[in-house]
Image 1 (tube, rainbow, N blue to C red):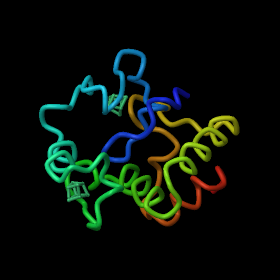
Image 2: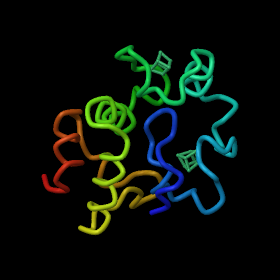
Image 3: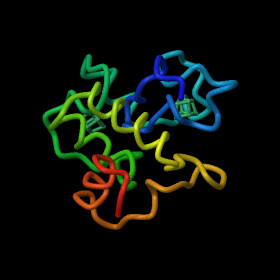
Image 4: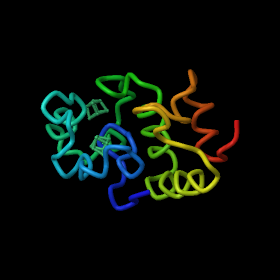
Length: 124
Ligand code: SF4
Ligand code: SF4
């Protein structure tokens, strides 16, 4: 885990992303999706560092996907340090963020509350 890369504007975990050997993370401007990222554009226009700093319950862009949406909700409730602590602990338990391509153990959920419970415990 490259904890220093933190969480992307949209809620994806740059710190655990399989692209992070080449990509310096969302805030480095080297994300491959930078030109078309709706969350980047919108949060920057609002002067926000991340979508979790926004008051809206929003499903725009990557927030239409369960993982960044639930990670964003988690940070709104508990803070970014707690999310990074949980992700680090879960990595130690064998939870894999990107197992095949960009899909891993945090993607296999339909319900944000169930995914938030999994983030906290690493157990289903
Ligand atoms: S590809 Fe996107 S999610 Fe992955 S490290 Fe780069 S900015 Fe973060
Ligand atoms: S409106 Fe949506 S995309 Fe824009 S900053 Fe807020 S949460 Fe992010």
